Length: 253
Length: 197
Image (cartoon, rainbow over all chains, first blue to last red; front, side, top):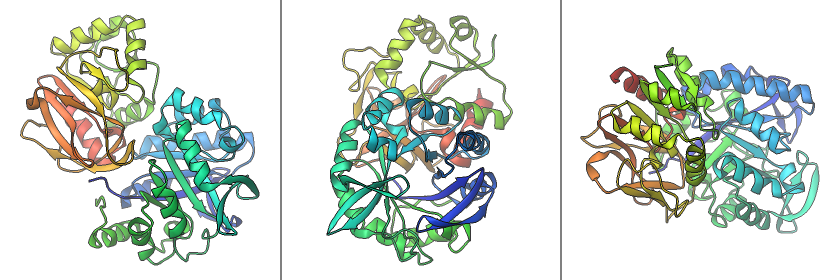
């Protein structure tokens, strides 16, 4: 049986890991290469890097980081943030990433999903969606959560699936940074509305039930978190033992 | 150049395979030259990508015959992901395009659950297996192989149904999963395969 995945996310700025609260207040959280190696050892099923640098130099730094991590850590690596063109995708895959995650660029130019999945395969094209609820509807936000779009989340999910996306990385902006738990309602609505695997993100706190809830009630295929892992609030191996004992299909090391 | 070659067929991400070979300290030649294939002592065919594109690319480079010949004449071969699928006759992914036809059988799409299957799934090894263990390994696949001869199957896994996770027959090993992305477990599979051959 396919295991539910636990995915630590590393927000990387200028080669260093940082984590914001509500997309603001960046805090330093360490060297991405050693953090990745530690997470892999503790049983992380995959690692996501979010490049939050806005400059071209930053992009090159990011590729160097991925290259270094990929030489030491033999689990899947996903890179997102600032990926805009087919060439960006190609470069990040060549540096050793297994998947590229697109957010703003996909909304602005949805054709890139089709082109990228035809060129590199659907399996390496992740669509990241930042979702926020307004008047009982979830809307897609772009530009790191600063700009609302006309897309309703459930419609956008259907669209990206049609265009050839391989996976959805769904972040609830309402839950992100609160540590009050994942957005179960949003995750469930998306997961049941698509045939693509859904990674739930935003809101994981020190309470391990947050994870069992998002798998059991939210129907998520994977759950992503950052700060609770970086700052050792929750240890990945403890979390996986907890999930296993709860009856959630889990890969134990 | 003889030795271990990693077939660079011009698609997919080969880096994760070469990274693991580097880490294990083995030398290899990343190549798509016919003469390298013909002289190789061991061949790794990694693969992510499209069955039809792969066969077209192999055919257009004139490599199909050389590769088939080497596999059939006993050169240790390790196929990964698409590298297991192309050993069969045909795939639902590319109707009308012939595979390498090393084994009778075909490649079919998952009919249940989310597709592609992405993530860690458990191996259930059969008695016809010499390198794998009953562990979780990483899969990314929409298609899986259905061999006519069940005796070549060396492990199954479950995704709404049992499916073939690996085959082993004489010099031929092939995995539907990605050992190069399966952490320490996958690392050991590589080591065992190389040391065995």
